[in-house]
Image (cartoon, rainbow, N blue to C red; front, side, top):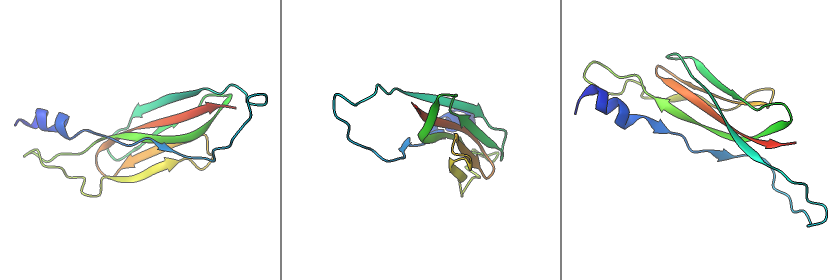
Length: 112
């Protein structure tokens, strides 16, 4: 297996996590809600990726793609993998960061 194919093979997608409280609404009071998934940019090695919900929406969950740092032999250097994976302090975005590798954050947003 070549380093390039190994790199492709070990790219892992994070599980999208649902966050928030689920309520029950009657048919007469239920408002139409829509969800959308927003992607952040792929981070530089060891830096953060931030996926921000657009205006008029709020964050209900998120996830990540992970692109680990590899040594010259193709082995994974990111033994600890992620050091951040969760909502931002302001609650508007999903933020991810790998120790050495790269990440791409995904936010699940719902209309207000």
